[in-house]
Length: 109
Image (tube, rainbow, N blue to C red; front, side, top):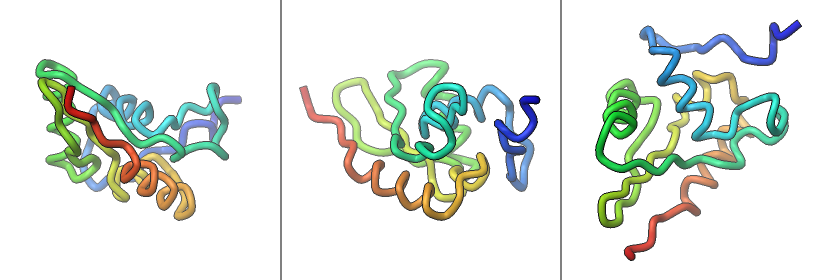
């Protein structure tokens, strides 16, 4: 019954399911929350130094995410096109996610 809701990740390397869940959250790619049609309208994840930031550095190393703006101790990460496709977003959704990433910048505070 749930088959097809979560696409099989398409990555060339094995990625920890925890990291894939973080990437899904970055993109708002949770079928139960907003439905697949809305995937990619969000493309940011804000971290502080620690476990989550370290996990995102792993995603960056795999090319699935990139680091964005910083303010104080905070850093924002965005899914890359490769990250979007790894979660099964189509071309239109990946373009929308790229646009969403450009619009989200941390303001110094």
